[in-house]
Structures are given as C-alpha cells and as structure tokens.
Image (cartoon, rainbow over the protein chains, first blue to last red):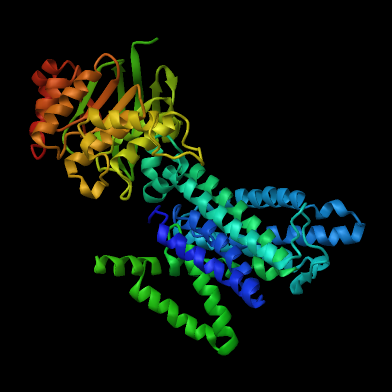
Length: 321
Length: 251
C-alpha cells in the first residue's frame, strides 16, 4: 500500500490524455476520444473502488450498483421528461443531486449489511446484494428491461453541452483529475489514516476509541457516491442505459484493473483501467477469443508483478539506481 | 467526586468451563497505581480485558467513576477515558510511530472523521503526538514503522498511543516485558509521574518494578482475588507465598 502520488505517473497520464485530443483536433479522428471518454470515466470508478478495496480492505462487487444508480437516474429523468413533457427533469444539477443522494443511500444500506462480514464473505455478500439491483433493473420494462434503452435526452447544464463529444471528453478528464485529487486528500486526511489503520488492525482503531465499522461505512458511502457520478457521466457518454452496467462483472472488471495496476496505490487503478479497456478494445476487434489472450495477461501479472504493474516499474527503477 | 475511580463487583468469566475470573471484587483509588500480580494463567489479562470492554463478564459489574459500564463497548470506554496497552502489541504494520499516536490524538480531538485536512499537517495534533512519543522516549523514532522498532520500542509505542488518548484511567498489560534495562527504568519513572493524576492499573511480572511503583498490589490466583493491599503487607502475606510457591514456573 502506498499513499504516494507519483509526479512521473501524473505526467505520463497527462500525455496519454492528450493523445485522443490531438488525434481529434489535428487529424479529425474522433474514435480515440469516444473510447477514451469511457475509459477515463471507468478509471475514476476504479479509483473510487480502490479507495475501499485497497485502503479499506473492502472488496465490493456491489460497486456496479452505484454506477447503475447514476446511469439510471439519467435514464429515468429522460424517460419521464418525455412522458410528462417536464423539461426541469433534465436539469443536470438536479440529476446530479439525485445521483448523489441515491447512490450514497444505496451504499449506506449495502455497506451496513456487508460490513457485518469480512474478506471473502464481504465479497460474496456484496455480490448477492448487488445482483438484487441488477435483477430490479432488468425487470424495469419501462426502461427497456433486459435490453436497456437509448436516451431521449442527455442531462442539461448551463453553457456546457453534453451532446458535444469533445466537451464530454474534457469533462471526463476533469472528473478523473478531481477524483484522483480527492482520493489523495482523503487518504492523507485524519479519516484516511483511521481507514488505513482499520485495514491493518481494527483492534488498534478500537483501542483509540473509534468504531472500525463506522470508519469503513463512511468510506464505503463516499466511494459509492463517486461511482454514482461516474455512472451519470457514463450514461451521458453512451447515450444509452442497460442493466449490464449493474451486473457484478462491471465491478469485477474494475477489480481486475485495480489488481493489474496496483491495489492500494494512487494511480495504479487508473493505469490498470486504461490497460484493461484498451486491450479489450484492441483484442476484441481482432481476435474472437480475445478473453483467452486476456487471461494469459492476468496470469502474467499474477506471476511477475503480484502487487500490480506499478510495482514492476518501481523494481526496474530500483535496479537502475 | 468519589475517591474510587474504578470498581468491579463479583466479576465472573469462564471460557468453555475454565474459570478465568472468579468473583473478583476490586476497588481502585483515583490517582493511584494499582498492580495486578499472580502466576501465569491467574486471569490477570482476562480481568484487564473486562475492564477495557474487550471481554464481557458472565456475571458481575464494572463501575467507572460510579457509573455502570459493564455493557459499554471498548471504543465507548476509551471515549470515557479508559485507555489500555496490549500485552501482545497491536500495531499497524505500515503506519509510522507518529501516525499511530496521531490516530489516538485525532480521535480525542474529534477530527478522526475529517476527510479533507491533512493528518500529518504541522500543528497541534502533531505536536501533541510528538510530545507523547517524547514522554516514552521514542521521539527520535517517530518516522519508523513497527518492523523497524525493537520489541521494547514497540511496547513504548503502545504506551505512547495510550497517552495520546488522554485517559483518566490507564490499563497497562506488562509494559516492561522485553523493554531494555535503561528504557525500563525510564518507563518506571514515567509511570511514577502518573501518581496523583492518572489512575493506573498495571499487570507486571517484574516484581522489583511492582514494589517500587504500586500503591496497592492485588494478587490473583486461579481467577480469584486472594489478597489486596499495601505492597509490604502483600510481600508478607502467607496465602500469596503459597500461590507463588505452588506454581514457581512464573515467580
């Protein structure tokens, strides 16, 4: 576990983020920007999951739920705005407020139940609770049930137009930056210290007068709310909602990304997500059994860099020094 | 204000048929240093757990400042002013000594749930934490993680964390075990300064330290309190001699 925010890591990330922008502006090629927006939003979701999984020892498969809540708020507002003709439902700030309240609320309930268990039991409890929400979304026929639905309207903000793809890309970049900065602040805060201590030794936290479960629950709620906003952005990016976002595999993919990049590191989840989703994008279009190649990649990471690829880079640097 | 800081009434605790605590009734005077002694397996640590709230007695009551705290959880007791150290150190492997004490200081100051300020920002919290480390002689080791500390230093850190809670009652479970000779003397002097202010309950095998420090010595044997009184009286007590001679593996 590390709370360090590597300057080199940030610079490289900055350069990576510029690539789709340059491709779009200089060559009129918008493909990377479209894919990149989704990747950056998922990276932010991975950072939020890492906050509880890496720094708080809460491997939650219910993280899909909060992404789903964010996406379905956009979808529901779009649907009911069309049905009732009420334009105020499309107000982005109203929707964001709803997203925060509902995802934090869902996280409080799910977290309170899951936190009665630890480790692999926590994982299984979060899986079970998460799938309940998946089934609910799949049964919501007015929102297309299993198939999901295309949005009639995106969220509306003053000045900023989410129908514009470069605008969405800039927002995704800013969102990821804010989430990285926020998680750094949180991990370094007195609360972050208590959270890390809870992960390492709950008895110690108890012995200074804090309830470990309360510390964990607050982190779970904060993390869930951030994932909610990520879901909100994701729906606006894809212009589409589907129950698949609530399926546990969404959180599972984020976990794989975190494991590849480095659990409990500040930037590992970001790089892990970029690597995972880029590989998926490239491999799935060229190779039918791309998941096989992907499996090999995961085995390689587990064999050569069990603490994530960031660890590998650190070792290379140490050997040179 | 009552003269008695802590009281137990007829405490019983058994683990699967083994009686670890049997009918223990004890009163600890405010500001005194009260030593719990007895052979291994006498139930000293189990008794301490029941005072700290990490073990719930089967029967009986624990009273702190005249209030029944028998059903109060461990964290709530710390918030009331009861801090403890662990016999087997309970530290966090990746936190520095300073961060350990900060955990206690920031809980005490009510800022443990602040999400946006920096825990290690220079200021009152860090000053207080460093002062606690200084009192136990660890100021120079503030940046070290537990693995980099000797076993004795880890014990000193345990004490510093407990002091960071700013307790009115301190429960020390063998604070001198494994501590070097010079450090032990320093810690004995430190505990001596608690007298009159901070009530201290001390489990310790180092009899020299116990007799140098304690105002009152209570002797446990097979879970039962067999004697309690002034150190000189205890040293002369026949029942105590028998308990120790009967099990000389420890004394």
